[in-house]
Amino acid sequence: MQVLVDADACPAVIKDMLFRAARRAEVLVTLVANQYLRTPPSPFIKSIQVPAGFDVADARIVELVASGDLVITADIPLAAAVIERGAQALDPRGNWFTRENIQERLTMRDVMDQLRSAGIDTGGPAPFSARDSKAFASQLDRFLARHRTSPRETD
Image (tube, rainbow, N blue to C red):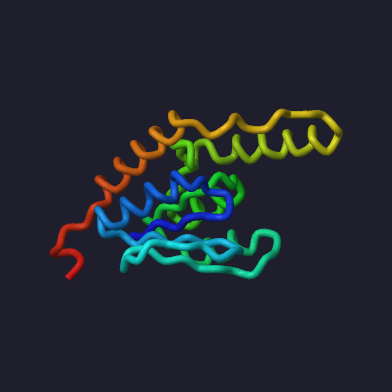
């Protein structure tokens, strides 16, 4: 099991939480972005820089993800793709994308895109808050506790 991060738009506070979790749980965390990302030295943390371009990082994440992995992203189409591959998707605000809610979220995203292209101001998401950070930390800890491997399984 690994954690893949759609890192271009991921808040720094979330990346820091993931770095601490990687060391604590000894789980591989891979940040994927189209820009260079500094990561702390750790055998459990790495970054992959992809070329600039529309959805290049997303395509790389889909290529790398396997069933049982966790992907951190706010990108709804990416979340849909990783769910289809048997992985789980969590947004940086601590909300799960699931088979049960992904189609509704895709539909809402399309509706909002249509409104914006018609010139209607939809306002955008609320600013990232400490509450969002806390919700994410809680969901990440629960996920890692459920998917913790015993030392015998890693030998």
